[in-house]
Image (cartoon, rainbow, N blue to C red):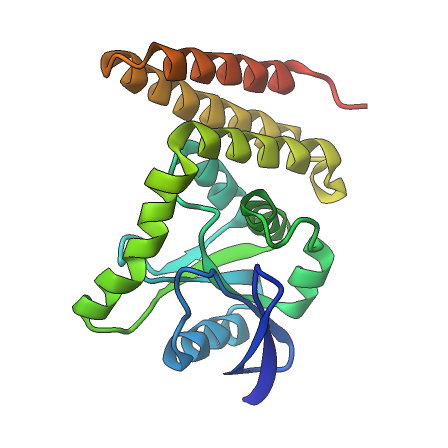
Length: 225
């Protein structure tokens, strides 16, 4: 292990004990411990197919390795889950190949995870903290997702990030089945939110969701050049 710069979404840097060929992206709501960073780096060393290791502070994600394509489909199907609010250790080669456009914005953060998953497998490790600390670390992220950001805003950002991924990221040009399956999962999650909004009496949000779902289905039907 050597001291290496940590790349944060806000452009600031910190230091952490990680291998020289790793890059750490830190969410502003939660800073991972040195133990968690070491565990994530160990996964990258042990699993050559993995390019991204997320550090989960909420205890809701099962540890293990997922193929990148499966992670993309599941990310599309999660609706308003905070996919964009993550701490992760990336293999430097994956980070550089994925690019850093927009890093520092919520959509840019999500786009990085999507591009990285298109290039390599994804793994998860848990932050080894006491439950009281886990609760305090997870609460700012949860508040940002359900409060400040808003569900319809998050869905729009998620949809646009996937659209940019499939229409403009060269490594996915030859993956039409993955593109179709992911767009279908995304449209389903948006329609599900529309049904909930309609049930709750929020006709404006329901209408916005249905319009977004139609856009996603239109993107799915478009032929790529």
